[in-house]
Each structure stands twice: as structure tokens, then as C-alpha cells.
Image (cartoon, rainbow, N blue to C red; front, side):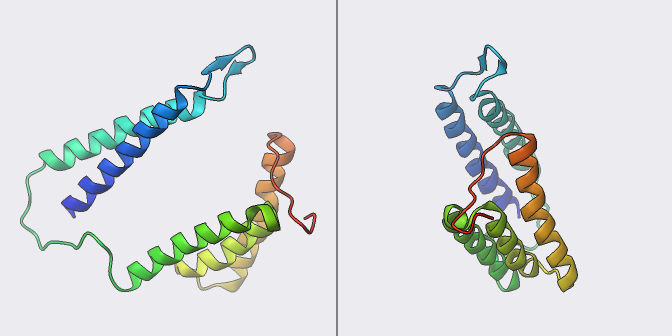
Length: 153
């Protein structure tokens, strides 16, 4: 388990450093307040610090000698991880074509059972609320334009 924390922490640290590097070209502030680079820069900075602390703590902690846990998941856990990655990739591919609301609804309908939710009504309610609720929050309240898709929904 220790090796898994170290690898995950280092990967996260590298991703945060790359994000910091890319955010350098964006303005941290503009005449209205925080600029386009404010959020990615400071989020990456906090993420790099936290992942660095995790790697440091895990490396410093003495090994308890317990049974080694494999770095790569196996069995049902592996299938859940594959389902999450596949759902995310499919949702990314469908976002422009179907639009935000329908894509998030389908994403939730597939992802929640893959994560273990067995109540169909809970999946249905969450999917509708996530699709339409998030669209309303971002599109109407925060003025973030989200894709509508070919059906106009």
C-alpha cells in the first residue's frame, strides 16, 4: 500500500507542476478581480504542496511489515476502475454532440451502478438532478456556457 501512495503522490505532484507551468502564461488578476490563471495556478500550487507532503509522510513512516497490497487493482476493483475511466472517456467524446445535460445524465446512469448503487430510483433522480441542475447552475447563475448538443436540450 505504501508504494501505491508514493506512486500516486508523485504522479499528482508532476501533474500539479505541469499545471503550474502552463498557468504561468495566464493572468492571475485583471481589472475586475481574479483572472483566468488565478484558479488553476493556486489550485495546482496547493495540490503540489499537499501531494509533496503525502509522499514525504508515507516515505518517512516505517514499514509495518504487513502483507503487501498490489499496486494495480484486481478483480471487482479493477473492473470498477476500468468502468470509471471508460465512462469518463465516453462522456468527454459525447459532450459536444449530445450536450451537457444528456451527457451528464447518461454518465450518471452508467457510472452509479458501476460504483455499486443498486436502487434504480436513486440513480434516476440523481441523473436528472445532476444533468439539469448542474446545467442551470453553471449556465444561468455562473454564466458559463455549456454545450447544448444536437437536440437543443
